[in-house]
Figure (cartoon, rainbow, N blue to C red):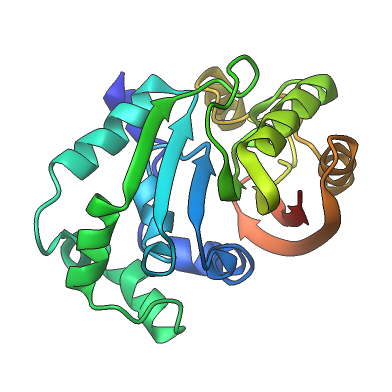
Length: 234
């Protein structure tokens, strides 16, 4: 099933183009403390490249055992030089836009040494046993199928967050339920709710987060035309 899951993986060449706003409004804001990547998929290391030099540690949780295994395989088989060999477009984008300043060798070392928890975690059923300074939910909470489930997922994100901690959410409602979307739903990479920015903001407010800020911006990605980025504090 690993190969089936991997077909949904990103194109390294396109990520900086499509997700420049995520890098600017999310990754760049991760600048201290301990980080929880809630719904890391198989690419927890990918986003961590952009913030690892500024934080104490990062932890990756995902409801998919397949995604977590792929992530573990990447980390366990990491070779010196993989950063520039496997991710040249993204890493150079980060350097060119002053997101990172450390050498590639140091970034690689920190990706391994600062990794804390790697865990299969169902945010609709499981309860957090740790709290973090920053919780990032990057296209992960919207895999729910109802607003009630979104509230449960958001409560989990709240419980993961330390007092005065920062919560960062990225979501993109799809335009229509295509065959690709339906297949992603089967892998829990998408959900049937497809929450709007208003739904996300209401859920964030409902569980108790404060100082909520919501930014919506256009994107041009198959089946998606809008990117919603929310931030809030506990």
